[in-house]
Length: 108
Image (cartoon, rainbow, N blue to C red; front, side):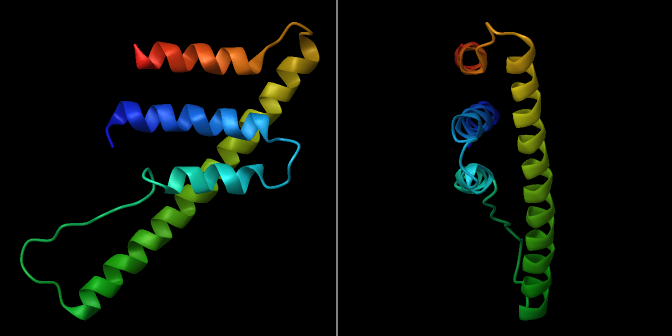
């Protein structure tokens, strides 16, 4: 997955979290979407890695991904709050259209 695809996935997750904000599962759903490709990882090691080294590497990656997942959840939560405030302050606000326009710009 290249950088543009990751950014497109991020915009999709923002749209998903915005559209599903009435549901209490919107963060879980958005994070699950990110895990499918963006948060997955593969580490290639030259030579052989013993069992202890492989286990330590897996634990380290799991910790990093867990922390990154919570960090992302915080960003999604903040985005939802900012979008809600924007809509409350401007009756013509269209968050979905803003996200759609950003996605189009990114695709170009």
